[in-house]
Amino acid sequence: MKQKIKTKGLYLNGHEAVMPSSLTQSKIFSVMGKNNLKLRQQKTKYTEVRTKNEAHTYTGYKLDIKYDYPIYHYLLREKQLQGSTLVTIDFNLMLDAIGKQIRPENRKALYNRIKQFKYCEISVTKYAGNEEKDKLPLVDTSFILEIRKISEFVYTVLFSKEVDELVNDFDTQKIDLVEFKKLKKRPSMAIYLQIKSYGYIRSHSINILFDKFKVHYDESRTNRQIRQDLLIGFNELKEKGMIKEFEEGRTKETKEKTFKIIKIKKNSKAE
Image (cartoon, rainbow, N blue to C red; front, top):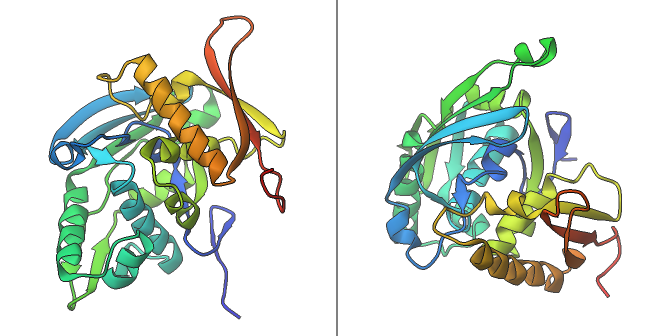
């Protein structure tokens, strides 16, 4: 019987990984448009207050939610499965997992993109405010330290020990790459990552502020454009049976825009 791998108290199955919220619930992996290839060659730097208790600063390449997120998800998953800072990666298996054809040119493109993760750095901290949070360390790390070629399609990727701290000491979600890859549209992927952070809510529905979904978009997009994008995304999630229904609304007191998401019950299909 294959031994189950446990990370941060969570068992991992298939292509699941425990992903830091600072990566999945922020603009680090953003919704890019047609010029994403050009944008992914640009660097950026920003500081974001993700929650009232956590903030981070990101410095590095602009990362696309559709192309770059699956790559880093797979790398972090392999790190958690192998339980080491030095991870062996079969590029043919990885290309298949992220939905790319197994070709020499795709292996080369994948290598070059992973190599750029060396120059993607994140610094995450908890706000001071009580004794418990003050004990949490500041984590400052690059996505990877090094990648080396071992054979035609086998590589090793070296992580810093701080990547483990990013997972163990801060907010995380368990994300399934297979489920994520069922989605074809970038807005759907952004919504999916946001919804996963509310997995602890047992209610059949959840209300999420519009501003929570905006984090995956840059300042060039207007609220109207983002709303139209999100409607496309919600409809794909509904079509794929990942949610049952969604409704637009506003909070009673502050009148902020919200989306009410009605979940699919486990072991049942969308009607």
